[in-house]
Amino acid sequence: MAELLTLARPYARAAFESASETDSINDWSDQLRTLAAISAEPKILDQLNNPSISKSKHIQMLTDMLGDPLHKAVNNFLTILSSNSRLPLLPAIFRLFEEYKADIQKVIDVDIFSAFDFDQQRLEKLSDGLARHLDREVNLIKHIDPSLIGGVLIRAGDTVIDGSIKGRLAMLAEAMEL
Image 1: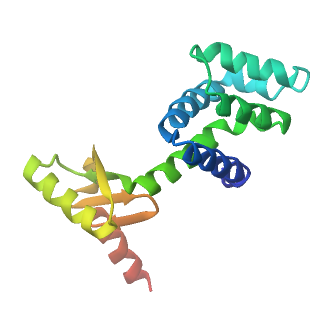
Image 2: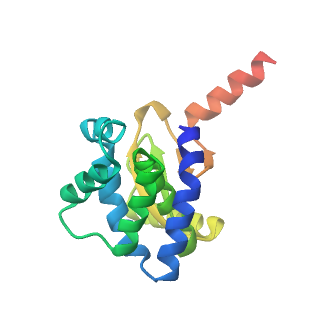
């Protein structure tokens, strides 16, 4: 997975810079989302990895399935990816593009895992605190995980805050082994 991200990063960066220059980040995002979903399908991925199929056929296959016409710059981007045999990287490119977009827009998705459901007031308080701490607008995504026993586990990008009882018990067990 890390290798895919390493290969995809320069393409995602170039796509994002192109989209930024033309003030079309949302258009690029929409089209890359669809292209990534199409290219992630196992049958399509097999076709994209098949060297006996011409590169122009790869692009034609993707654009036919897209339905809507591609933004000219996105079409040029696909041509570059195809000429370098990198069309299978579209899902990773989209993921990185979305990270760049969220970073520039100062928005972050935060997963909150808890053993029990939160009431709206507590959720808003947690959201406000995280927004201040992360200096970003926060999109909360709630998950119920009874195995946590109590407390919460918060994942915001690379940041993990484990305030769950399960996490505390694991830390205690680890400390006792020393």
